[in-house]
Image (tube, rainbow, N blue to C red; front, top):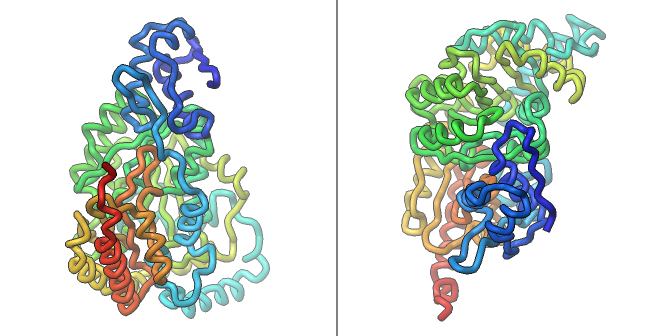
Length: 478
């Protein structure tokens, strides 16, 4: 086993140092599934610490699904922590439409809208206007913070969602994923703790882990994150920030209540941490009721607001922005500069007109209608499959249904059987950072028309019937 080191000069409890090192060894495969950890007494003696310190570290490993205890035998590394990377990487890539999906495949995995839904003609005219107006200057490198008129337009745009900010705090970025990377580079040092929702966006997890962060998960409930459990972790771990998607969450579709949003901001202030709010679909509400970002509730300058224009407006633009707390503005600017210096000047200038002249409003109205029709088609189909599904919540907006399968059926098996029949779906385990859940599916209606959604639901039904009729799945081994 790799040696565990403790540093008594660090302002980190020793049991957390032990926990973090074991966690990292398990995640990188140095300690394989089934490996027996040293006894509590022997490790305490080796490290020169109290037995209670090791007990606390082992208990935390068990609570987070890394180890299990056999009474009278010892503590062992859990099975199933290593993912099938080839399968999951294919799913992650297909979600972002970065690989070609075979012709005829129905895609319930993608979070991107059909290309024909985007306002191509209107945007082409905007680009031509910019070229006629600015000539060669349209291709100049912009300020690293972004094209100033666009930043002014963004300040006015977010005011519609209850956010009052200044141009100095607004940073243009090349899409939501870059925004997550910029925040990670600016704030995360090796060994820092980050709290995320359980489940959460898989590419955000990957970004935080690439910086050497320790990830802690807090369960989601119907109205948002479990505030009681969150506060327990805030007291104990002092995280750098909390990563959340409060509006039409990916993958669950959950919408935080206003009360939860207010209390979440209060907790960030109380425990002196930040919240990274990832907003990709606030525009896509089906109910007509007002939905506000978490940032609109931020009385203490604790929320980092990250907004992508890619999912709903036009993916190929790769545009978004960060509204930073005052104390973090310079850190984010440095991190963005190191990442790619500047975002496309031509696209920024065209998108400035798109926002400034309110062209986006017509587009969003049309998109919302199309998406609602697709949502209704998938909802109606899933209602007919309830005998195969334990539970699913009906989202109030966004792109996703989060479906829980019954019995011992595993989502990875459903995935392969569906793919064989021409349907691409996403197993839910890729959205869990630590303890994997194997009986969830995320079904997206973003890129399929109503007819394809009905065909896809029929494929799901056929797969469920096959599995139900396969008695070998349900015969216990005696």
